[in-house]
Amino acid sequence: MSTPYCVVGCTRGTGLQIVRQLAARGAPVRCIARDPAKARSLLPSGVDIRAGDVTDPGSLRRAGFRECGVIFFAADITGGIGGRGFFKPEAQIRAVTYQGLVNVVDAAKAAAFTGRFVLLSGMGSELPSLTGRLLNAIKGNLQRNQCDRNDYLRNSGLDSSIGRGGVLTDGAGGQAAIRIAPPVHRLSLLRRIARADFARALIAAADAPSGRMFDVFNEPGSPPTDEALTRQFECLRRATGAEQLSL
Image (tube, rainbow, N blue to C red; front, side, top):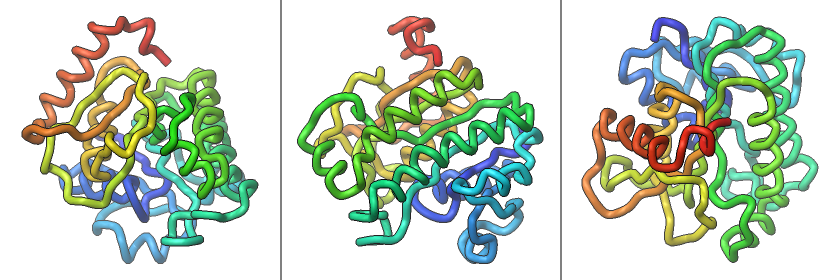
């Protein structure tokens, strides 16, 4: 891709993994960061770093979304216990995880962005589960925010894909199979995905034909090639029907 991949939320977690993997492939990458100086200390050399805050719509108008081929939205609340926003005020969490997505989508549309918008979301946010209740308790009703932003993106008119990860882990990627499945699973501690593997699946979704929503998690087996990941998306579309998966 000659146009840049754009990553919003690029200095930690899955967003950082996406940047590193794209840069390792030699792809052009643009990073939107609230703190560009911090981003330069964390990100690979050669990436285009621009200032932008998902809670400040004005800053997003300077991100140059029109020039991008793909936008990844990986922004999440930080601080709190463990640096992951645990037990921060619910309104503050929603301002980043939901309203931040709204602001980026609106800025992309205002910039006449015509590429693929890829949203990092959570598995089973619309289904009750013990793991989901625990997550909501420590992260301010996060699953409602996920449902609301999924709906906002799906109704935005943008070409989009929503990857719903299992429980994220910081272990090394490339140690297990990656399963791409229909979006029907509850969040469970038994379904996990290494952040590096989640990033690989999201990059594959960005380049796969036809936008869709999907669940992704690790399972026993050998790590797939990029071509094998693409084939999983193709098989998923044929098995469930393009109309059912379309966003």
